[in-house]
Each structure stands twice: as structure tokens, then as C-alpha cells.
Image (spheres, rainbow, N blue to C red):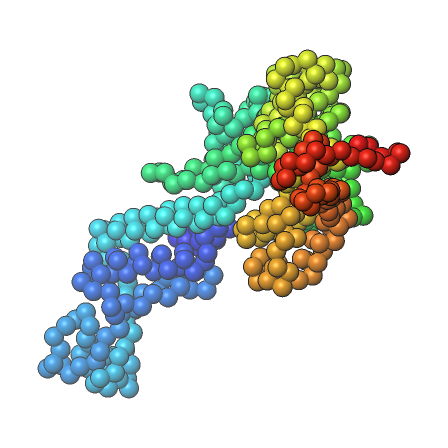
Length: 478
């Protein structure tokens, strides 16, 4: 019996992952509950486990009293009886008296067992819940057990996970015993325990696969700006790096496309596009429409994030994609509403006449007089600079140059060296022309009679009425 208890304890520790101290505390509490039911109190009870949990010893602490003062057999022991156990016993000493578990009645024993079982079940459930809750957002591997109404139940070892139909890729199919790699997206408590929800359609699933297959993403040398998916068909991943010696797209694709192929194979053939992120929306939109080659991108409405991409005729179907998937994913990746047209459609569509004028005006090399140039359109401007400047009410290059230079660090919370770099960027990219008003040269004339001012188009002086005539030298206009 003792060996069975020891084996049960070891099993709970190894298989259920329950900490040893929790198991011992639970067993102690259950025995104390039985002790209290038998003797009315458990304050004087002591529980000791034998070496390697080969048994349990129960003791009752009792105070030695004189034979005449003996009243409570649970908490006290008379001196004469105490000296039979310890010859040197004296009144006031405390003895630990062994308690025979067989003294417990049947109900007390059953209570102890029920208390222990329930407590260990609760501890096991809570321990597992905490373990899987900490794994939300991580990939786990399990095996197909059964299916009901489209939901697949997956054996995860210690628990059973559920794999809802809505989180299954339409390209994939499973059979009993199949190995399933999925993302833990949710761990929720239920009346009977808890539920582990799995997914293969979340964008985060692709992120974790990329971290496993591409070391530069795992160590943050290359960072992911955003991932968008049409599960089973295509995924677009916008990447960037702060290092100038690394091509983020090339590193993700890998030699001969091996890395991207591995990810695509794990997704059962789903196409994956790596896109270079660019702070310039025109360039980002151009990149996002890959694999199509884009001839030009026009920003139609910056505030409403509306843009137009112009492509060659043979590139139109590639840019739009099957059922519009490519352009839809590009819209979501860039957070812009992108319209795609051929050059012919662009020129023939009457709606684009004014648009073309506005676009050409906005992006022509020679900016129209009075046109506002925005700081965010300059290459090399960091997002944190733009945010800080806009918070200070500075959006255009003109506003920046007109601001008091000495007040700018405090006004924008941008360091002086960064403000100097912004000025350099402006000088590198914008030609600042100082316009000088040209004064028309006018020649003054006066009346020969009264001296009043006159002009060459007058026949008579407006002051004295004398007739006027003008003689000019040869070569001059009258």
C-alpha cells in the first residue's frame, strides 16, 4: 500500500507536472480533514512522510497534566500514562503520541480520499491551464484524433486541443493520426476544465514559421512590418532592416528561393510574397503589388489614402490577381485603397483627366508656385520625426523653415542634431528659390506748361488743358 502511494506521487509529479510540494500539501490537508472529523480538531495533529514517500506517520501533540487535572483526552495525557511512554516525562511537557490510522472511522477515511482526489484534480487542471495559457501565440504539434461538425480534436499530449473549421486552411485536409502543426490562439476555461484553441489561418502563424526558418527574423536583424493573408492562396509579408548591408527581401527568400519554398510547403503550397517596406507610400504601394511590375503610382487623395497604380496591359491581371486577391492584399498591407489601370484605361477614362492634371502637378519635377511640400514626402525622414513635428503643428517644409530655430528642440522634443539632419535632407531634396519682385520700369513725363504728370497716351494735359505732342528719338516707342 505504501509503495502504491509512492508510485502515485511520482506519477503526479512526472506526468501531470504538479509540483512536489503541492502534492504533499494536498495529502497532508486531506489527512488533517479526516483527523478533524474523528477528533473534532486538527490543531494538534502532525503529519510526516517516510523516506521516498513509502508511508505516512500521524502524531497527536498532547500536553502532560496531573492525573487529577486530566480532562481532554484529545489534547491532554495524564502524567502516569505519559511516563509509560517516556520515563522522564514531567507535567507541562508535550508528547507526540503516534496515531493509528485504523482508528479513523470509514467516513473519515472516505472524506480524506475524496478531498485528496478533488484537490489534486484541481491542482492538475490549474497547473495545465497556466502552462498552456503561457503558450498562447506559440506553435505546437499534435495529432488528429477525431472530427465533429468540421471541428478537429487534436491530441496535444497532456490535453486535447480543438481546431475549428474557420481556422483551417481551405487548401488542407486531414485524416486520423495526421501530424498537425498549429498556433495556440486561445486558452479558455470551461465548466469541465479548459479548452486549447488552434489555428493555421492566423497571420501570427506565418510570423512564427518565419522565425523558425529565418534566423535574421528570429534575432530581429530583419523586422516584420506587417503580414496579411488570404489563407490557402497568398500571403504578403512586409519586411525591413536598419542595416544597409542586408537585403531584407533577398535574405527571406533565401538562396534559389529555398527559404520561401519551405514556408510555402508548410502552408500546403500557399504563395508567399516578401515585400520591402518603404516609408514613402508610393514606393510601398509599388512593392506591395508584386509580382506585378508597376509603371507609375499616383496619390489621388492623401487624406483618404486613395492611390492609382498604372501598369502595362500584360501586367494588369498579375497586379489584380485571381479574384482580385493580389490588389486586395496590397490594400490591406499598405492600408491604402489602390485602383489599378492600364495606361490606355488611365488616359481614356474621363474621370482621370482632372486626376492626371492633379497628379502630374503634385509630382512633377517643377512644383507650382505656392504648392505646399510636406515633410513626410521627403526621403530619409524617420517616422518619429514626422510624428513629433506634426504634433507641434509643423507639416510642410515651409512651416519648418519659418519656425524659430532656437525654439525647435523644446517645441518638438527632437534633438538638435536630428533637427540639423532634417535641414540637410530638405537642402538635399528641395531647391529653395528666393523670389524677388520685379519692378516695372516706367518713364515719367510732365506737362511743359504747368509741370503736371502726364503719360504718352494723353492728348491734353488733365491739369491745364494744353495740347500735348511727344517727340521720341529714333529707335524708341512712342
